[in-house]
Each structure stands twice: as structure tokens, then as C-alpha cells.
Length: 247
Image 1 (cartoon, rainbow, N blue to C red):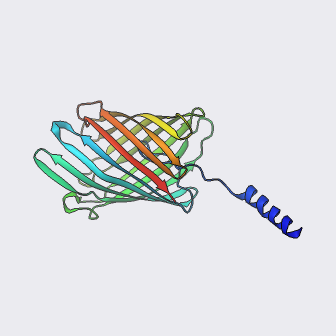
Image 2 (image 1 turned 45 degrees about the horizontal axis):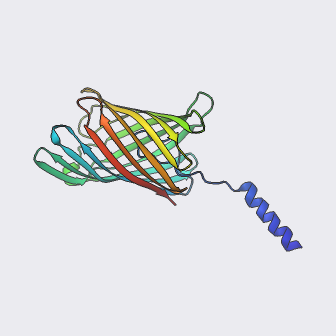
């Protein structure tokens, strides 16, 4: 009898105090990064391959780009970005690792009424942590505020505002993104997005993209996306696929 009571108390304790981890949320495949934080103590990897057609028949391959994340607590994660790039510029071919970026994401506020769920993301590149052809003269910071509204059970609105630097010149590039996400089913998601970059000393370029995600398990998701340039100085088009997992 005592054993049955003890087992019942243990079951009630586990039911009342345990928290179910939400399905994985990733910063890919769109350009709009999510305000969601990786759960405490969990390690998350988001990786993908991209082909981009630029002007004058130039091409860029990302083989791959990977975001490594670790949840320190419910409001803070540390981040590392690595990318291997292959480029065709006129008749010249280049390949190697671009500078590694280290950073963090911190939750600022939860959604309440018209106030969106908001987080801040900051990175800085390490100019010498790169292949010789891609090393930069200076460390290059980048940051953005990422916001999200829940419009209905299936529809959400997300947007980012931020700035970045290239490590070569002091000129600032301003960033904006705007995306609508729609849950087709509990596992299949979709989005359409407008995003752009506005260099301080050049004309802004604007792009349109869209894609789908599929949740294979709560901890594993695959994605496929594609986009086109809306202005003459934007890339002609790109296509990407990838996956995200955590443990």
C-alpha cells in the first residue's frame, strides 16, 4: 500500500511540475530571425545549402552555412555561425570559410496585446578566423531586433530591424525583414517574406522569397526556400534547402 501511495505521489509530482518542451523553432530558412530562445541546456544546429545567381552571370554557393546555438537559460542563448563559400566572379573562382561570427540572443519581452514578442540578436565577426581570401581588416559587428505577433492560431507576422558592417569599410548597412508565417498543418509550415539591405553609401536592394518547413519530430525540421531580387542591384534569384535539430 505504501509503495502504491509513493508511486502515485511521484506521478503527480512529475505531472504537475514537468514542462513540455515546445517544438523546435529555427532562424532559418527565412531572413527574419525568430525571437524564440533555445530551451535551457539544449544544443541546436541549423544548417543549409544555398545557390545564388548574381548579376553578370556570377554565382555564389553556400556549402553549407551553419548556426550553432546553446540555451543558457530561458531568456539567453549563445551563438556561433560558420560558412563555407564558393564563388564564381567573372572568370575567377574563389572558395573558403568566411569569418566566423560569435554572438548571443536575449529575450526582451513576451507578446502582450499590441506589444510583440521581442528579442535582441548581436554578433561580431572574427577577421582572422577565416580562409586567407576571406579575411577582413577589422572585426565586424551586426545586430537586429526581432519581433513577432500572433495573428491567429495558424497565422503569424514577424519582422526584423538592424544594422551590419563588413569589416572592410566603416559604412553601415541597414537591414529590414517582414514575413508572414502560415501553419498549413501541425507539421507543415509556410511563409512569404519581403527583405532588403540599405548600404549607407549605395542604393538599397529589395527581395521577395518564400518557403516551407516540415517538422519530422519535435526536435528535427527540414526546409526548402527560394527567392528573387526586386531591384536591379539585388541577386537575380536563389534557392536553398536545409535542416535544423536539437538535443
